Structure formats: structure tokens, C-alpha cells
Length: 286
Image (tube, rainbow, N blue to C red):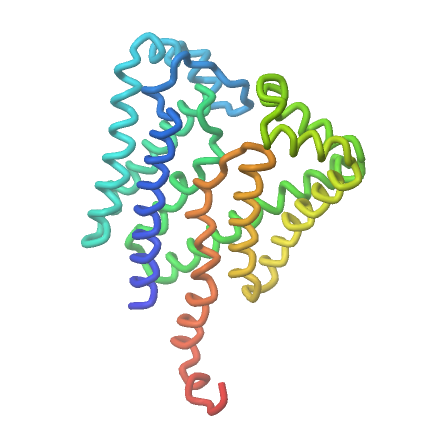
């Protein structure tokens, strides 16, 4: 199906562009394994990262920083090389190997406190869409990826409801104070610190911001029932990520490439329906 081939190629180009941009940002902020000095182990409930620590392998890596640098280089070369090659020819085995390497790299980076695994979802999942498989299976995989992303974001809102934090006036105030404690202590006169202080001193506004953010997260549940809002959901997610950078100093921009499945879902559905029901395309006024 040419439509699937075109969508896959567009996603590959977007993946490559996003990966290059990510590499530039990481380089500018010293967020590569080889640039981490000192390496600060992160507390995490991920069994893989705990295994890295308990086995002593992570400690061995910190004693050999050159290996960290080699892991970074391999990460960039493999992602750009394999995905770029897959633009011109089927490269399924190498893509599967790339997925394994990306998972190992993401686990090591998470254990070292550089990035959480969630921040690296695009590089952990999107290569699956570049596999040359049967069209039916590719469409199923695409919709699984879309559903996974919707659940990933909406689950944050569901968790706030289940914990009851959405109904606590002090919760988000405390989150802001905890998240920005270093900033408030070291640069209390900066524009960002002043903004945080303003929100803390206006708890009602702070709570409204928290409720609005939760409402946006829960709105993604609508995607499980219709494709109609997918483009809106994508731009809401981009706006949320940008706001998170300024309000929480959390960089989730690397997940945006995965969110781009929302831009192609309606297009893919139209192509599939056209092929399955070609008579609809000939009805005047449709």
C-alpha cells in the first residue's frame, strides 16, 4: 500500500530530524553519558536499572569514562545510520538490534540520572514503525503506538485523580517548592524564581493551573473513542511540553516525535477506508 510506505517515510524523516535536534540539545547541556561528571546514581524502581547497579556493571562503567563516550557515539551512529538506511531498503534485523541497544542505553542513562526512561520513549518505540512488515500488521502496530501514547499521557491525569492530589490546594504549591528548591535558594531574584514565588503566594491561581494541566491530560482519553481530535491533541501536547519547561524545568521534548503519530492517524484511516470501501470516494458531495 503506497499510503503506508509514504507515512512510514515521513515518520522516518521526522525521527531523524528529531534525533539530530535532540543530539544538539544534549550536547549543549552536557547530557551525554561521556559528559557526566560526576555520575550521580538515580533512585528508580526500574528493575533493569537496579540490576545494573546491583551487578556492579554500572560501577565498572563509571570507572571507565571512555566507555561512556563510546556508548554515546554508538547511540548516535546506530540511530542515524540504521534509520537513514531503512529509508531506501528493508532493514528489519538491524532495526530490532537498534531497539535493543536503545533500551540498554536508556536504562544506563536513567540509572546515571541523566534522563528517565519515559523521556526517551520516542527512541525506544518509534523504530518499530520503520519495520517492513505486512500492511495489516503495520496498521495494527501504528494504532497500538497511538493508543500507548494516549495512555502514557492520560495516565498522569488518572493518577492525580486516584491519589486525590487534584483536590488538595497545597499539593501543587508543595510540588513547585520542592522542584525548584535549588533555583529558589541560589537565584531568588531571577525571573523564573519570581514567577514561582508569585504562584506559591497565589494558591488559588496555582491550583487552577494544576487543574487545567490535569484536564488536558484527561482529555487525551477522548482519543480512545475518536480520531477527530488527534491534531488538536498533538498541539496540546506540544504546548504542555513547552509549558513544562518553563514551569517545572522538565524537558520532555524528546517525546514529541512519538506524539507525531497523532498527525498521521486520520490520514492513515482515510487511506485504509478508501481501499476497503472505494465506492465511498465516488459518492458526490463526500
